[in-house]
Length: 155
Image (cartoon, rainbow, N blue to C red; front, side, top):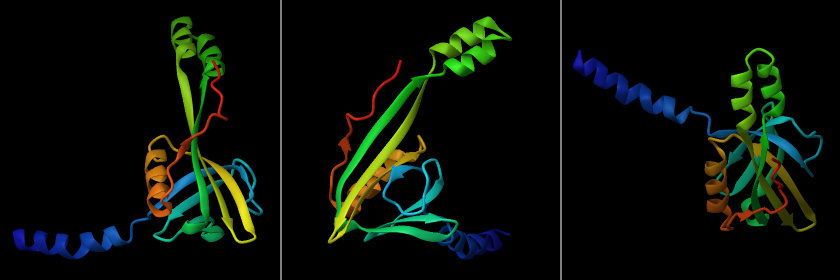
């Protein structure tokens, strides 16, 4: 039984790791990506020499890593007032506590210039993925992410 289990892990586990999806789910927030609207979900792939954005399995933007001129990061922080009012209708205590809670949205921006092909984009990233996205982008481009002052804090 031990040999059968060992054989299973030796043969099938590596195959499942190779087949794993190495993409990040992001939300396009705006920029120069053609035929994409703000708020649309895309997949971001960070390859060794390029950055790819896919929509339904088709590449919509391919950016060479050497063309990236800047990587930026910012947050949008806001209070959950609307949710607090909705919960406060039923229970005042829970609504008051929810009004004190803050929500953060994480944004990553990329600008590039590759000859005559220049552009930029901003994307909203999941709170569990934005650090990995920044590290991947910094690693393949050699650029350090800049903390954007353009994102404002709303109380």
